[in-house]
Length: 528
Image 1 (cartoon, helix red, strand yellow):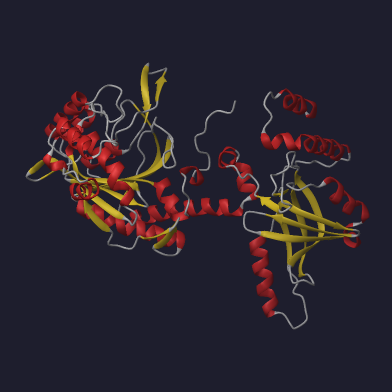
Image 2: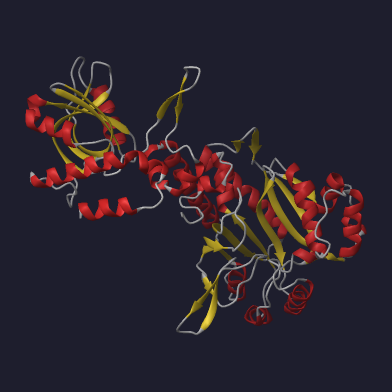
Protein backbone atom coordinates (compact mmCIF):
# COMPACT_ATOMS: atom_id res chain seq x y z
CA UNK A 1 0.00 0.00 0.00
CA UNK A 2 2.89 2.36 0.85
CA UNK A 3 4.60 1.74 -2.47
CA UNK A 4 1.34 2.36 -4.32
CA UNK A 5 0.84 5.67 -2.49
CA UNK A 6 4.34 6.87 -3.29
CA UNK A 7 4.14 5.85 -6.93
CA UNK A 8 0.89 7.76 -7.39
CA UNK A 9 2.45 10.85 -5.83
CA UNK A 10 5.51 10.61 -8.14
CA UNK A 11 3.29 10.47 -11.19
CA UNK A 12 1.54 13.76 -10.47
CA UNK A 13 2.44 16.06 -13.32
CA UNK A 14 1.70 19.29 -11.49
CA UNK A 15 3.18 19.79 -8.04
CA UNK A 16 0.80 21.30 -5.54
CA UNK A 17 2.27 24.39 -3.88
CA UNK A 18 2.12 23.02 -0.36
CA UNK A 19 2.56 19.33 -1.11
CA UNK A 20 5.79 19.98 -2.98
CA UNK A 21 7.35 21.25 0.25
CA UNK A 22 6.35 18.17 2.20
CA UNK A 23 7.15 15.30 -0.14
CA UNK A 24 10.26 14.25 1.77
CA UNK A 25 8.45 14.55 5.11
CA UNK A 26 5.64 12.36 3.82
CA UNK A 27 8.16 9.67 2.96
CA UNK A 28 9.55 9.82 6.49
CA UNK A 29 6.08 9.45 7.97
CA UNK A 30 5.23 6.57 5.69
CA UNK A 31 8.38 4.86 6.92
CA UNK A 32 7.25 5.42 10.51
CA UNK A 33 3.94 3.70 9.70
CA UNK A 34 5.86 0.66 8.52
CA UNK A 35 8.03 0.65 11.64
CA UNK A 36 5.01 0.96 13.94
CA UNK A 37 3.31 -1.97 12.25
CA UNK A 38 6.53 -4.00 12.51
CA UNK A 39 6.45 -3.40 16.27
CA UNK A 40 2.83 -4.57 16.47
CA UNK A 41 1.36 -1.07 16.86
CA UNK A 42 -1.67 -0.31 14.70
CA UNK A 43 -1.35 3.31 13.46
CA UNK A 44 -5.10 3.35 12.75
CA UNK A 45 -6.82 1.38 15.55
CA UNK A 46 -10.53 0.66 15.26
CA UNK A 47 -11.71 2.25 18.49
CA UNK A 48 -11.01 5.22 20.72
CA UNK A 49 -12.06 6.05 24.28
CA UNK A 50 -12.85 9.46 25.75
CA UNK A 51 -14.32 10.60 29.07
CA UNK A 52 -14.21 14.37 28.53
CA UNK A 53 -13.64 16.96 25.87
CA UNK A 54 -10.79 19.36 26.59
CA UNK A 55 -13.21 22.14 27.48
CA UNK A 56 -15.22 19.87 29.78
CA UNK A 57 -12.23 18.61 31.76
CA UNK A 58 -10.81 22.13 32.18
CA UNK A 59 -14.17 23.33 33.52
CA UNK A 60 -14.50 20.32 35.83
CA UNK A 61 -10.98 20.75 37.20
CA UNK A 62 -11.49 24.49 37.83
CA UNK A 63 -14.75 23.75 39.66
CA UNK A 64 -13.04 21.03 41.74
CA UNK A 65 -10.22 23.45 42.65
CA UNK A 66 -12.71 25.93 44.08
CA UNK A 67 -14.10 23.27 46.41
CA UNK A 68 -10.73 21.77 47.41
CA UNK A 69 -8.78 22.46 50.57
CA UNK A 70 -6.02 25.10 50.35
CA UNK A 71 -2.70 23.89 48.86
CA UNK A 72 -4.29 20.61 47.69
CA UNK A 73 -4.89 19.31 44.17
CA UNK A 74 -8.30 17.74 43.46
CA UNK A 75 -8.21 14.33 41.82
CA UNK A 76 -9.87 14.56 38.41
CA UNK A 77 -9.19 11.60 36.16
CA UNK A 78 -9.72 11.84 32.43
CA UNK A 79 -9.15 10.18 29.08
CA UNK A 80 -8.70 12.77 26.34
CA UNK A 81 -8.33 12.58 22.57
CA UNK A 82 -7.17 15.10 20.01
CA UNK A 83 -4.72 16.16 17.36
CA UNK A 84 -1.13 16.94 18.35
CA UNK A 85 -0.43 20.63 17.69
CA UNK A 86 2.87 21.03 19.59
CA UNK A 87 5.48 18.67 21.12
CA UNK A 88 8.43 19.70 23.30
CA UNK A 89 10.70 16.88 24.44
CA UNK A 90 12.93 17.78 27.42
CA UNK A 91 14.95 14.73 28.40
CA UNK A 92 12.83 12.61 30.71
CA UNK A 93 9.68 14.67 30.17
CA UNK A 94 7.64 15.88 27.21
CA UNK A 95 4.97 18.56 26.93
CA UNK A 96 2.41 17.98 24.19
CA UNK A 97 -0.50 20.23 23.25
CA UNK A 98 -3.49 18.53 21.67
CA UNK A 99 -6.63 20.07 20.20
CA UNK A 100 -10.08 18.58 19.93
CA UNK A 101 -13.30 20.16 18.72
CA UNK A 102 -13.71 22.17 21.90
CA UNK A 103 -10.29 23.53 22.95
CA UNK A 104 -6.54 22.97 23.30
CA UNK A 105 -5.01 21.31 26.35
CA UNK A 106 -1.53 20.33 27.48
CA UNK A 107 -0.44 16.73 28.12
CA UNK A 108 2.50 16.04 30.45
CA UNK A 109 4.53 12.86 29.79
CA UNK A 110 7.22 11.62 32.18
CA UNK A 111 9.41 8.53 31.99
CA UNK A 112 8.81 7.79 35.70
CA UNK A 113 5.22 6.72 34.91
CA UNK A 114 5.56 5.64 31.30
CA UNK A 115 9.05 4.18 31.12
CA UNK A 116 11.94 5.31 28.95
CA UNK A 117 10.94 3.23 25.90
CA UNK A 118 7.39 4.56 25.71
CA UNK A 119 8.56 8.14 26.08
CA UNK A 120 11.07 7.56 23.26
CA UNK A 121 8.26 6.09 21.17
CA UNK A 122 6.27 9.29 21.67
CA UNK A 123 9.12 11.57 20.71
CA UNK A 124 10.34 9.47 17.80
CA UNK A 125 7.16 8.15 16.18
CA UNK A 126 4.50 10.75 16.98
CA UNK A 127 4.33 13.84 14.77
CA UNK A 128 2.40 17.08 14.65
CA UNK A 129 -1.01 16.37 13.22
CA UNK A 130 -1.27 12.84 14.64
CA UNK A 131 -4.34 11.95 16.68
CA UNK A 132 -3.64 10.62 20.16
CA UNK A 133 -5.53 9.21 23.15
CA UNK A 134 -4.17 9.90 26.63
CA UNK A 135 -5.35 8.92 30.12
CA UNK A 136 -4.24 10.35 33.45
CA UNK A 137 -4.90 12.84 36.22
CA UNK A 138 -5.44 16.57 35.89
CA UNK A 139 -3.08 19.03 37.58
CA UNK A 140 -1.86 22.58 37.25
CA UNK A 141 1.77 23.22 36.24
CA UNK A 142 4.10 25.68 37.98
CA UNK A 143 3.22 28.23 35.29
CA UNK A 144 -0.47 27.78 36.08
CA UNK A 145 -1.49 25.81 32.98
CA UNK A 146 -4.14 23.11 33.51
CA UNK A 147 -2.69 19.88 32.10
CA UNK A 148 -3.16 16.10 32.03
CA UNK A 149 -0.44 14.08 33.76
CA UNK A 150 -0.41 11.10 31.37
CA UNK A 151 -0.30 7.56 32.73
CA UNK A 152 -1.15 5.82 29.45
CA UNK A 153 -1.50 6.77 25.79
CA UNK A 154 -1.90 5.37 22.30
CA UNK A 155 -1.86 6.51 18.70
CA UNK A 156 -5.33 6.90 17.12
CA UNK A 157 -4.42 8.02 13.59
CA UNK A 158 -1.09 8.73 11.95
CA UNK A 159 -0.89 11.89 9.86
CA UNK A 160 0.94 11.30 6.58
CA UNK A 161 0.79 14.86 5.26
CA UNK A 162 1.89 17.55 7.74
CA UNK A 163 -0.64 20.28 8.38
CA UNK A 164 0.13 23.73 6.95
CA UNK A 165 2.09 25.84 9.40
CA UNK A 166 2.80 29.53 9.83
CA UNK A 167 6.11 30.59 8.26
CA UNK A 168 8.62 33.28 9.18
CA UNK A 169 10.02 34.91 6.03
CA UNK A 170 13.04 37.25 6.19
CA UNK A 171 12.54 40.32 4.02
CA UNK A 172 15.25 42.21 2.11
CA UNK A 173 15.57 44.78 4.91
CA UNK A 174 16.15 42.04 7.48
CA UNK A 175 12.71 42.20 9.09
CA UNK A 176 10.82 38.96 9.65
CA UNK A 177 7.22 38.65 8.51
CA UNK A 178 4.97 35.81 9.61
CA UNK A 179 2.66 34.45 6.92
CA UNK A 180 -0.42 32.57 8.04
CA UNK A 181 -0.95 28.95 7.07
CA UNK A 182 -3.06 28.56 3.94
CA UNK A 183 -3.01 32.28 3.24
CA UNK A 184 -4.48 31.95 -0.26
CA UNK A 185 -8.32 32.19 -0.13
CA UNK A 186 -8.64 29.77 -3.04
CA UNK A 187 -6.32 27.24 -1.43
CA UNK A 188 -8.23 27.55 1.83
CA UNK A 189 -11.51 26.89 0.01
CA UNK A 190 -10.02 24.02 -2.00
CA UNK A 191 -8.49 22.37 1.07
CA UNK A 192 -11.16 23.27 3.61
CA UNK A 193 -10.27 20.24 5.71
CA UNK A 194 -6.78 21.64 6.32
CA UNK A 195 -8.16 25.16 6.77
CA UNK A 196 -10.49 23.93 9.52
CA UNK A 197 -7.75 21.88 11.15
CA UNK A 198 -5.37 24.81 11.64
CA UNK A 199 -7.75 27.78 12.01
CA UNK A 200 -10.05 27.78 15.07
CA UNK A 201 -11.72 30.99 13.87
CA UNK A 202 -12.82 29.22 10.68
CA UNK A 203 -14.38 26.44 12.73
CA UNK A 204 -16.14 29.09 14.80
CA UNK A 205 -17.57 30.74 11.65
CA UNK A 206 -19.23 27.50 10.65
CA UNK A 207 -20.56 26.96 14.15
CA UNK A 208 -22.15 30.40 13.82
CA UNK A 209 -23.64 29.38 10.49
CA UNK A 210 -25.20 26.32 12.13
CA UNK A 211 -26.55 28.54 14.92
CA UNK A 212 -28.05 30.83 12.28
CA UNK A 213 -29.94 28.02 10.54
CA UNK A 214 -31.16 26.71 13.89
CA UNK A 215 -32.35 30.22 14.84
CA UNK A 216 -34.29 30.63 11.58
CA UNK A 217 -35.99 27.28 12.13
CA UNK A 218 -36.83 28.09 15.74
CA UNK A 219 -38.32 31.46 14.82
CA UNK A 220 -40.55 30.05 12.08
CA UNK A 221 -41.57 27.02 14.17
CA UNK A 222 -42.53 29.37 16.99
CA UNK A 223 -44.70 31.31 14.54
CA UNK A 224 -46.65 28.16 13.56
CA UNK A 225 -44.91 27.54 10.23
CA UNK A 226 -44.60 23.91 9.11
CA UNK A 227 -41.24 22.78 7.72
CA UNK A 228 -41.65 20.71 4.55
CA UNK A 229 -39.51 19.22 1.79
CA UNK A 230 -40.06 19.70 -1.92
CA UNK A 231 -38.37 18.01 -4.92
CA UNK A 232 -34.80 18.90 -5.81
CA UNK A 233 -35.11 17.12 -9.17
CA UNK A 234 -37.99 18.74 -11.03
CA UNK A 235 -39.53 18.10 -14.45
CA UNK A 236 -39.86 21.87 -14.95
CA UNK A 237 -37.90 24.59 -13.20
CA UNK A 238 -39.50 27.81 -12.00
CA UNK A 239 -40.05 30.28 -9.18
CA UNK A 240 -37.05 32.49 -9.99
CA UNK A 241 -35.22 34.20 -12.83
CA UNK A 242 -32.22 31.92 -13.32
CA UNK A 243 -30.76 29.34 -15.70
CA UNK A 244 -31.06 25.79 -14.34
CA UNK A 245 -28.74 22.81 -14.33
CA UNK A 246 -30.10 20.09 -16.58
CA UNK A 247 -29.76 16.34 -16.15
CA UNK A 248 -31.49 13.26 -17.59
CA UNK A 249 -33.48 10.51 -15.91
CA UNK A 250 -32.81 7.30 -17.81
CA UNK A 251 -35.75 5.25 -16.55
CA UNK A 252 -38.31 8.02 -17.12
CA UNK A 253 -36.60 8.96 -20.39
CA UNK A 254 -36.89 12.68 -19.75
CA UNK A 255 -34.76 15.66 -18.90
CA UNK A 256 -34.91 16.89 -15.31
CA UNK A 257 -33.76 20.12 -13.68
CA UNK A 258 -32.10 20.86 -10.37
CA UNK A 259 -34.45 23.28 -8.69
CA UNK A 260 -33.73 27.00 -8.79
CA UNK A 261 -36.41 27.77 -6.21
CA UNK A 262 -38.93 26.05 -3.89
CA UNK A 263 -41.66 28.57 -4.67
CA UNK A 264 -44.06 26.84 -7.02
CA UNK A 265 -44.11 23.64 -4.97
CA UNK A 266 -44.56 25.42 -1.65
CA UNK A 267 -47.46 27.44 -3.04
CA UNK A 268 -49.11 24.21 -4.23
CA UNK A 269 -49.25 23.30 -0.53
CA UNK A 270 -51.29 26.44 0.18
CA UNK A 271 -53.86 25.07 -2.25
CA UNK A 272 -53.88 21.94 -0.07
CA UNK A 273 -54.78 24.07 2.98
CA UNK A 274 -51.37 24.03 4.65
CA UNK A 275 -51.50 27.70 5.58
CA UNK A 276 -47.91 28.39 6.74
CA UNK A 277 -45.06 26.41 5.19
CA UNK A 278 -41.32 26.86 4.89
CA UNK A 279 -38.24 25.05 3.63
CA UNK A 280 -34.52 25.52 4.21
CA UNK A 281 -32.49 23.69 1.60
CA UNK A 282 -30.25 23.81 -1.44
CA UNK A 283 -31.03 25.57 -4.70
CA UNK A 284 -28.93 25.36 -7.85
CA UNK A 285 -28.48 28.07 -10.45
CA UNK A 286 -26.29 27.74 -13.52
CA UNK A 287 -24.97 31.28 -13.40
CA UNK A 288 -21.83 33.29 -12.76
CA UNK A 289 -19.72 33.03 -9.62
CA UNK A 290 -19.00 36.18 -7.60
CA UNK A 291 -18.36 37.30 -4.03
CA UNK A 292 -22.10 36.82 -3.39
CA UNK A 293 -22.98 34.02 -5.85
CA UNK A 294 -22.30 30.28 -5.79
CA UNK A 295 -24.02 27.82 -8.15
CA UNK A 296 -25.19 25.78 -5.14
CA UNK A 297 -26.54 27.75 -2.19
CA UNK A 298 -28.82 27.52 0.82
CA UNK A 299 -32.20 29.18 0.55
CA UNK A 300 -35.01 29.84 3.01
CA UNK A 301 -38.50 30.28 1.60
CA UNK A 302 -41.81 30.57 3.42
CA UNK A 303 -45.41 31.12 2.29
CA UNK A 304 -48.08 32.54 4.56
CA UNK A 305 -51.76 32.26 3.66
CA UNK A 306 -53.94 35.36 4.18
CA UNK A 307 -50.91 37.64 4.61
CA UNK A 308 -49.59 40.34 2.28
CA UNK A 309 -46.13 41.75 1.62
CA UNK A 310 -46.43 44.34 4.38
CA UNK A 311 -47.05 41.63 6.99
CA UNK A 312 -44.19 39.58 5.54
CA UNK A 313 -42.00 42.69 5.76
CA UNK A 314 -42.64 42.99 9.50
CA UNK A 315 -42.06 39.28 10.09
CA UNK A 316 -38.81 39.41 8.11
CA UNK A 317 -37.21 42.16 10.17
CA UNK A 318 -38.25 40.39 13.37
CA UNK A 319 -36.79 37.09 12.14
CA UNK A 320 -33.47 38.53 11.00
CA UNK A 321 -33.08 40.53 14.21
CA UNK A 322 -33.76 37.37 16.24
CA UNK A 323 -31.20 35.42 14.21
CA UNK A 324 -28.59 38.17 14.63
CA UNK A 325 -29.04 38.10 18.41
CA UNK A 326 -28.75 34.32 18.53
CA UNK A 327 -25.56 34.29 16.44
CA UNK A 328 -23.76 37.42 17.66
CA UNK A 329 -25.52 38.35 20.90
CA UNK A 330 -26.75 41.67 19.49
CA UNK A 331 -28.83 43.20 16.72
CA UNK A 332 -25.84 45.46 15.98
CA UNK A 333 -23.41 43.67 13.70
CA UNK A 334 -20.02 44.81 12.44
CA UNK A 335 -19.54 44.29 8.72
CA UNK A 336 -16.34 45.79 7.33
CA UNK A 337 -16.29 49.48 8.13
CA UNK A 338 -20.02 49.56 8.87
CA UNK A 339 -22.08 48.75 11.94
CA UNK A 340 -25.38 47.33 10.75
CA UNK A 341 -28.43 47.66 13.00
CA UNK A 342 -30.96 44.89 12.37
CA UNK A 343 -33.36 45.96 15.11
CA UNK A 344 -36.84 46.70 13.69
CA UNK A 345 -38.07 48.80 12.06
CA UNK A 346 -35.77 48.80 9.01
CA UNK A 347 -35.57 51.64 6.50
CA UNK A 348 -38.22 51.57 3.76
CA UNK A 349 -37.61 53.01 0.28
CA UNK A 350 -40.01 52.86 -2.67
CA UNK A 351 -38.15 51.65 -5.75
CA UNK A 352 -39.35 54.45 -8.03
CA UNK A 353 -38.28 57.09 -5.49
CA UNK A 354 -34.95 55.42 -4.79
CA UNK A 355 -34.00 55.12 -8.46
CA UNK A 356 -35.07 58.72 -9.12
CA UNK A 357 -32.95 60.03 -6.23
CA UNK A 358 -29.82 58.06 -7.19
CA UNK A 359 -30.00 58.10 -11.00
CA UNK A 360 -32.15 61.12 -11.81
CA UNK A 361 -34.55 58.97 -13.89
CA UNK A 362 -38.25 58.55 -13.11
CA UNK A 363 -39.12 55.07 -14.37
CA UNK A 364 -42.85 55.85 -14.19
CA UNK A 365 -42.42 58.40 -16.98
CA UNK A 366 -40.97 55.80 -19.38
CA UNK A 367 -43.53 53.09 -20.07
CA UNK A 368 -41.62 51.22 -22.79
CA UNK A 369 -38.17 49.71 -22.98
CA UNK A 370 -37.25 52.02 -25.87
CA UNK A 371 -38.19 55.19 -23.96
CA UNK A 372 -36.37 54.05 -20.84
CA UNK A 373 -33.24 53.17 -22.80
CA UNK A 374 -33.18 56.64 -24.36
CA UNK A 375 -33.54 58.24 -20.92
CA UNK A 376 -30.69 56.20 -19.47
CA UNK A 377 -28.45 56.93 -22.44
CA UNK A 378 -29.16 60.65 -22.24
CA UNK A 379 -28.62 60.88 -18.50
CA UNK A 380 -25.71 58.42 -18.18
CA UNK A 381 -23.91 57.96 -21.52
CA UNK A 382 -21.14 55.92 -19.89
CA UNK A 383 -23.55 53.50 -18.21
CA UNK A 384 -26.11 52.03 -20.55
CA UNK A 385 -27.80 48.61 -20.62
CA UNK A 386 -28.17 46.34 -23.61
CA UNK A 387 -30.55 48.18 -25.99
CA UNK A 388 -32.30 44.87 -26.70
CA UNK A 389 -33.23 44.43 -23.04
CA UNK A 390 -36.83 44.40 -21.87
CA UNK A 391 -38.03 47.30 -19.72
CA UNK A 392 -37.79 45.23 -16.56
CA UNK A 393 -34.13 44.40 -17.17
CA UNK A 394 -33.37 48.08 -17.71
CA UNK A 395 -34.99 48.95 -14.40
CA UNK A 396 -32.94 46.18 -12.80
CA UNK A 397 -29.86 47.76 -14.40
CA UNK A 398 -30.65 51.13 -12.79
CA UNK A 399 -31.18 49.42 -9.46
CA UNK A 400 -27.82 47.66 -9.58
CA UNK A 401 -25.82 50.58 -10.91
CA UNK A 402 -27.19 53.44 -8.82
CA UNK A 403 -29.49 52.50 -5.94
CA UNK A 404 -28.23 49.18 -4.59
CA UNK A 405 -24.74 50.42 -3.52
CA UNK A 406 -26.37 53.08 -1.31
CA UNK A 407 -28.44 50.60 0.73
CA UNK A 408 -25.99 49.95 3.56
CA UNK A 409 -28.23 49.80 6.63
CA UNK A 410 -30.94 47.10 6.50
CA UNK A 411 -33.53 48.48 4.08
CA UNK A 412 -36.71 47.27 2.40
CA UNK A 413 -36.94 48.37 -1.23
CA UNK A 414 -40.59 47.96 -2.24
CA UNK A 415 -43.09 48.28 -5.13
CA UNK A 416 -41.36 46.69 -8.13
CA UNK A 417 -42.22 46.79 -11.84
CA UNK A 418 -44.45 43.96 -12.98
CA UNK A 419 -42.03 43.28 -15.86
CA UNK A 420 -39.55 41.53 -13.55
CA UNK A 421 -42.05 40.07 -11.07
CA UNK A 422 -44.17 37.45 -12.87
CA UNK A 423 -45.49 35.85 -9.67
CA UNK A 424 -46.50 38.96 -7.68
CA UNK A 425 -49.84 40.76 -7.36
CA UNK A 426 -50.25 44.20 -8.88
CA UNK A 427 -50.91 47.18 -6.65
CA UNK A 428 -54.64 48.06 -6.90
CA UNK A 429 -55.03 50.78 -9.52
CA UNK A 430 -51.46 50.38 -10.85
CA UNK A 431 -51.18 47.34 -13.16
CA UNK A 432 -47.51 48.04 -13.97
CA UNK A 433 -46.33 47.87 -10.32
CA UNK A 434 -46.51 44.88 -8.00
CA UNK A 435 -46.53 44.37 -4.24
CA UNK A 436 -42.97 43.16 -3.92
CA UNK A 437 -40.04 44.04 -1.69
CA UNK A 438 -36.40 43.11 -1.46
CA UNK A 439 -34.35 43.42 1.71
CA UNK A 440 -30.88 44.96 1.37
CA UNK A 441 -27.93 45.33 3.72
CA UNK A 442 -24.29 46.30 3.15
CA UNK A 443 -25.15 47.18 -0.45
CA UNK A 444 -26.44 43.81 -1.64
CA UNK A 445 -29.72 41.94 -1.80
CA UNK A 446 -30.55 39.73 1.16
CA UNK A 447 -34.14 38.63 0.58
CA UNK A 448 -37.09 38.89 -1.80
CA UNK A 449 -40.86 38.76 -1.11
CA UNK A 450 -44.25 39.32 -2.74
CA UNK A 451 -47.91 39.49 -2.18
CA UNK A 452 -48.29 36.36 -4.27
CA UNK A 453 -50.42 36.20 -7.36
CA UNK A 454 -53.36 33.81 -6.87
CA UNK A 455 -55.43 34.56 -9.99
CA UNK A 456 -54.79 31.61 -12.37
CA UNK A 457 -55.91 33.55 -15.46
CA UNK A 458 -53.63 36.49 -14.67
CA UNK A 459 -50.78 34.10 -13.93
CA UNK A 460 -51.18 32.28 -17.24
CA UNK A 461 -51.17 35.58 -19.13
CA UNK A 462 -47.94 36.65 -17.38
CA UNK A 463 -46.23 33.38 -18.25
CA UNK A 464 -47.17 33.99 -21.88
CA UNK A 465 -45.88 37.59 -21.75
CA UNK A 466 -42.59 36.45 -20.26
CA UNK A 467 -42.16 33.92 -23.03
CA UNK A 468 -42.79 36.61 -25.63
CA UNK A 469 -40.61 39.34 -24.11
CA UNK A 470 -37.48 37.30 -23.44
CA UNK A 471 -35.32 35.32 -25.82
CA UNK A 472 -34.64 31.62 -25.27
CA UNK A 473 -31.16 32.15 -23.83
CA UNK A 474 -32.11 34.83 -21.29
CA UNK A 475 -31.97 33.77 -17.64
CA UNK A 476 -35.07 35.80 -16.72
CA UNK A 477 -37.32 33.80 -19.02
CA UNK A 478 -39.81 31.88 -16.89
CA UNK A 479 -41.29 28.66 -18.36
CA UNK A 480 -45.05 28.14 -18.33
CA UNK A 481 -45.89 25.53 -15.68
CA UNK A 482 -49.21 23.88 -16.61
CA UNK A 483 -49.43 21.84 -13.41
CA UNK A 484 -48.90 24.92 -11.27
CA UNK A 485 -51.71 26.67 -13.17
CA UNK A 486 -53.94 23.64 -12.62
CA UNK A 487 -53.23 23.83 -8.88
CA UNK A 488 -54.13 27.53 -8.88
CA UNK A 489 -57.42 26.78 -10.64
CA UNK A 490 -58.47 24.67 -7.63
CA UNK A 491 -58.25 27.89 -5.64
CA UNK A 492 -55.26 29.42 -3.87
CA UNK A 493 -55.76 31.67 -0.84
CA UNK A 494 -54.24 35.15 -0.90
CA UNK A 495 -50.77 34.88 0.56
CA UNK A 496 -47.39 36.45 1.12
CA UNK A 497 -44.20 34.68 0.04
CA UNK A 498 -40.58 35.15 1.04
CA UNK A 499 -37.14 33.92 -0.05
CA UNK A 500 -33.72 34.61 1.46
CA UNK A 501 -30.18 33.48 0.69
CA UNK A 502 -28.97 32.03 4.00
CA UNK A 503 -25.35 32.22 2.86
CA UNK A 504 -25.59 35.99 2.41
CA UNK A 505 -27.05 36.44 5.88
CA UNK A 506 -24.22 34.25 7.21
CA UNK A 507 -21.74 36.60 5.50
CA UNK A 508 -23.26 39.60 7.24
CA UNK A 509 -23.34 37.98 10.68
CA UNK A 510 -19.74 36.69 10.52
CA UNK A 511 -18.20 39.76 8.82
CA UNK A 512 -17.11 37.75 5.79
CA UNK A 513 -17.01 39.50 2.43
CA UNK A 514 -17.03 36.49 0.13
CA UNK A 515 -19.62 33.72 -0.01
CA UNK A 516 -16.74 31.22 -0.19
CA UNK A 517 -15.90 32.08 3.42
CA UNK A 518 -19.26 30.80 4.67
CA UNK A 519 -19.51 27.69 2.45
CA UNK A 520 -17.59 24.63 3.57
CA UNK A 521 -17.06 23.47 0.00
CA UNK A 522 -17.72 26.25 -2.54
CA UNK A 523 -17.71 25.66 -6.29
CA UNK A 524 -14.21 25.97 -7.78
CA UNK A 525 -12.64 25.39 -11.14
CA UNK A 526 -11.30 21.88 -11.61
CA UNK A 527 -7.63 21.56 -10.73
CA UNK A 528 -5.51 20.97 -13.80
